[in-house]
Length: 357
Image (cartoon, rainbow, N blue to C red; front, side):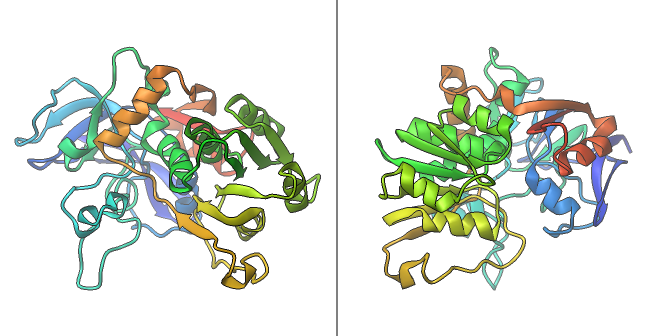
């Protein structure tokens, strides 16, 4: 049986490079040869045992590659074609899909569905940190890459760009809005760009890393706030003239950032949550105005599917946003363990790591 190299979850704090069989495909699937993928913050949650997956699973969910083989019933694509697939791979026919929430697509059970079920790569099935990847429901999830775009130009589309933009979309950012983005990692930076594209005219980024704050400015932030230097809530309220933010986007997944996001909202404002939380959240009664503040709290799992990928690549093609600066480090798949060590410890100014087999 032909083998490939893959990054495999072994146990808590151990993801290693191992040999695995090249995946078989079914009639509706595609096999793609990975040309570029990346590491994501969620992969670090898996590494640390904060998000449970099966031992032996190949990790990764941001694939760029070339079609190696197509299932017998797949139409509209050809072998040798450059493609991406979203981190979320909806089938189109599950209960969640038919309810209009394709990101939550997963196996229907007598007890409902599993939250995050639409996220299959590196969660429910083998993922993209490997030489080959099986893409389920290929006609719903593969999207051809325009010839003029490089791998790194589209590398953020499968997850980071889609997730960050969805923070602004789900927050219903409007023209002239004030938006605060808490945490300027790759998702937060994409949320800044998404808020600008949606029409926000005042965008406040909150972080403490100077390099990230500088990137936020280049992507549309009108103000940056170092949370280690000021009282974040008081400072943001001062910037907004006491009015508060129309939308606060939480992009880290901690109690502190969630609470700050809630406290800076104007009456009737929206907290748009993108963070992956590894412990229970508490909603302070004063921040929530005892439940009487007309606030909205919405959460988002990265929208996926072929049409979402096409639209994101159109944004990249238009020049409206340039996400190449987010790729700060590059490793070969053979060096995946070193890449995880760097990324998990956030050393050397890392934002995103590109991995090439």
